[in-house]
Length: 134
Image 1: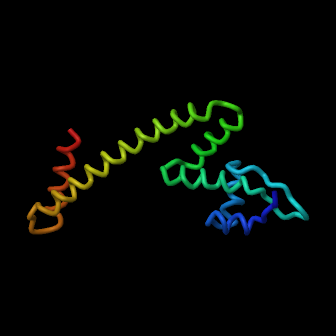
Image 2: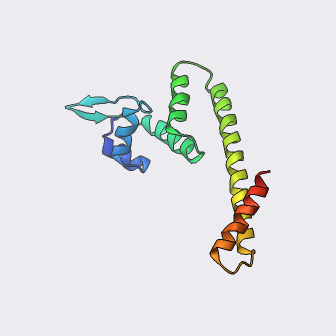
């Protein structure tokens, strides 16, 4: 298997080399082998980078991703760890959706208030906001 440079890995993964170095510094990626001071990677690093990219798109933080990868390295059940973290993330997403729905409702009400000036309109929105929290 051929070894690739950080630039080659970055290009194939569609990210910057500085991102790869950052991932290494926070232990999301393992330290690579070095040849004359230059990082050398085998192609399996691309799978890990793809995993990181997908989990980030799902809303996972780098800390959560690090926990997943660390538990995998410790021979823990990755599927069990994934289930736990995914359930937690699902709860967070549900709360985010509820907040977004509340904001949307308040904005819609604010657009329909018919107030003659901004201060009155803000009072309408605040009144609706306070009644929505009860």
